[in-house]
Amino acid sequence: MTRHEQRRTAREDAMTTTSALGRRGLMLGTGSLLATGLLAACASEPEVPPAPPTGKELAEPTPVQTAEQLSEIIPAISAAVTEADKAKDVKKLAPRVVGSAADFRKSAYAMIKKAKEWADELHVPGETIIVPMTSVDSEFPRVAVVLVEDAAKDGVPYFMALQQADARSPYTTWGWAQQAVGVEMPMVANELVGADPVGPDTEGLLMTPKEAMALYAKVLTDGDSADPDDLLAENPFQTTAHANIQAERKALNAGVEWDEAATIRETYEVKEEELLGLRTDDGGALVLGTLTSRRKVTIKDGATMRYEEDNAYTKVIGKKEFTSEYIRNYGTHVALHIPSKDAGGAIQPIGATQTVLKVSGK
Image (cartoon, rainbow, N blue to C red; front, side, top):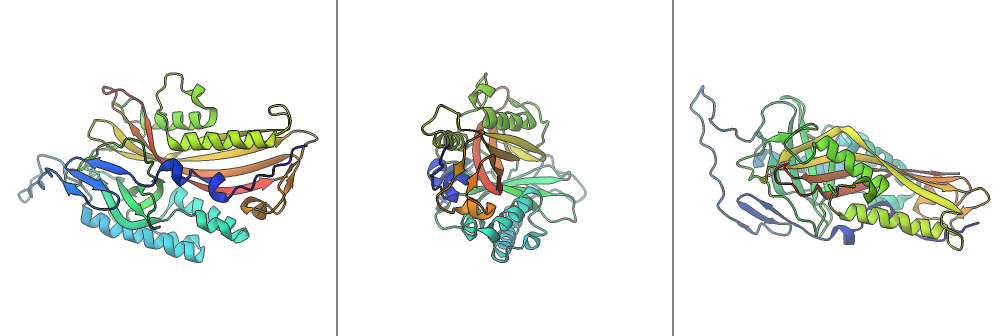
């Protein structure tokens, strides 16, 4: 019999900690130096492309979103999230917040109704843009990636995915990934220039975005053995997630042989319909995507997993003792930098935001 007496807070177990991701980051863009606290300086910004004569096309592509347009979109998204969180009503996210971001919020609100402390774990993007990254492709769906401030004071910024389905539809977001600090960030084109969009099967990269996301999910599931060629760089989210699992595994089997009382395994999957990105200055790509995962504790016959006191998890489940299984489901938005095939190097995860979606046990 094992007694699980750890009193984890929701933040310790449910998401990458601030200390792991760091507090603040620096992102470089061609012609711009942007710090998260202040707009520090600008160097050799490119000139705005001249307006074309009436009836003729520009010789060079120009961004389809302007910083001015994005400055209206981001506050609208932040306001929608804030209003929905206050009312715990997912309908208030529409029409700006869609897809997994809306689905994750719906699940989070259900958790909060049973244990109000989960409200402290909601990730809320602010209305201030730090770095806008715009597309030069006029085809639909159009995409953009924007680094935005956290709504919380001194919070860590988020890479936000933006997409416009057609000319009559508003820009929407299906997710935002919290910037990892202590990790080298890619250089991106100034918003006056714009960048080419990349899709799931874009070539010319170390791996296609679809393959890179699949590799990340595999490594998060199986560890470094799933990446024998070392194509994925170390990153705070992976390090913290694996450390949490091993710490829990040790606690579950305290006083007995390894895994004699219980085993624990988390399996990640890619949400393939949510993936977008833009080319970076080095010929690589900054890509955002969505992962879901299921962390299952399997309790061996004759053993019992028991919490001495109620916590954020047991309040949701409605019990503190388990003799068969204990399961947590998560949704995670991630950001990766994929280098070009010519440049080589490794795929670098540069952001992650994780949300607890469901807990159960018996």
